[in-house]
Image (tube, rainbow, N blue to C red; front, side, top):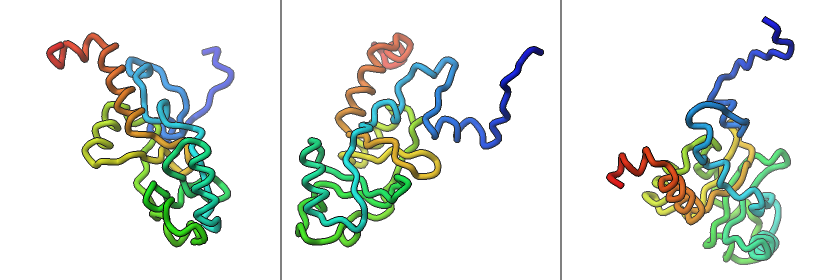
Length: 161
């Protein structure tokens, strides 16, 4: 057939999308969690002191820090409350272990709704093997969802707009 560089991606379409790899088709242009997540989110390790993590988060303009291991696998999360714990405490002792994470392919409108419904200020976005893609902030998700809805005439019509 003339194809020279062909690969059989065994693990499937969702794993491909969870890795944040490009897609094609009618929904490829819709914003997803991985598109909106902040790639510059501060990270820290479990053996660091809270004061170090807090300083890194504050200097980056965040009120959260994602706890990762050497391979950037998400181990925990420090939200505002945990970042203001005693500065000499180790991250491991005060972090929220095993936070709920979401995949990069989740539609931004769905993600915004989940974050609003569950009052989540932020959510880690990870690949299927748990590696950090970025931190999705609720205000970014809601803004992107509104923009997506307003720029899609089919969606506006469905909503009565």
